[in-house]
Image (cartoon, rainbow, N blue to C red):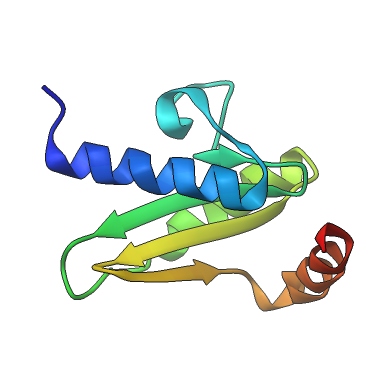
Length: 106
């Protein structure tokens, strides 16, 4: 039987894949070939969630997804779910790229 946390994480990944028009990566990014949790045409997304009232954002997590995304010519995103709040983190330097992509998607 799958535990509650794992189900919530998988639900988050499926929702992100649908919202960004992408696919959940096999193994949720833990494999050697497929990195990140969700991959779409423009983005590589790392999903993080907690039921606590805080999430400790680690620069190393951001640097890892950023480097992996850039290696496959994608824009890196971190999607955080803290309780019922949903947040997306993107580097300031990538905001122009994100704005241009969102105009194309509409």
